[in-house]
Every structure is written in structure tokens, then in C-alpha cells.
Image 1 (cartoon, rainbow, N blue to C red):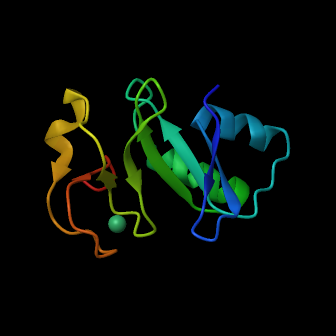
Image 2 (cartoon, helix red, strand yellow):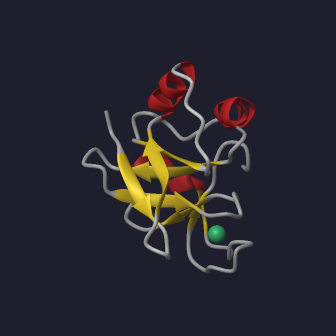
Length: 120
Ligand SMILES: [Zn+2]
């Protein structure tokens, strides 16, 4: 199980970060998070699908933020509030390289973004 917590700018822990498998298990257990959920995807998992996002929204009523992590849990790319791709923060596995664009994100942050299947 890959689990960690993200600390926001106010240094409050507010978003649990889980794999989609863990999210589905917690939903089955009656979990009701107050804030958006960060879903960690290893390259071998693939990124969140629209069905995954719909499941989280319909079951929990909170948005999902997808982060791509390597096998050691280091963040390679992370989704921002714009939900328009993942900001690339480290070299990506070759399987994702043809899905990277260099346009600025609607959030205003420049740099490369890894686009998801729903956006391509
Ligand atoms: Zn952004």
C-alpha cells in the first residue's frame, strides 16, 4: 500500500493520498473525506481514467487530483486545481513522453504537462 499525507500551505494536513485501489476500498468502508483526494499512480498503474474520477466524485463528492509517482513514491508529475494535465516535476518513464505538452497550464504555471487520456 502506498499512502502518504500532503501538507498544504498553511501546514495543515488536509488531503490523504492513496492509490485508486485504496480509494475504492475506503469508499467500501464508508470513508467520507472532507477535502479532495490525491490519487497516486505508479507508471504500472496508469493514470486516473474518467471512470475513476466519476467514481470518486459520485461516491465521495470531492475532486480527485492525480499524481504520478515512481516505484519509490517520488512524485514525477502532479495535477493542479485546473485539472488540465499533470505538471511534470521529474523525468518521466518513456511510455509517457509522447503525451507531454509545453503550453502553460490554465493555472498560470509554465512548463511541461503530462496530458491524460481524457484530454488528448
Ligand atoms: Zn496547473
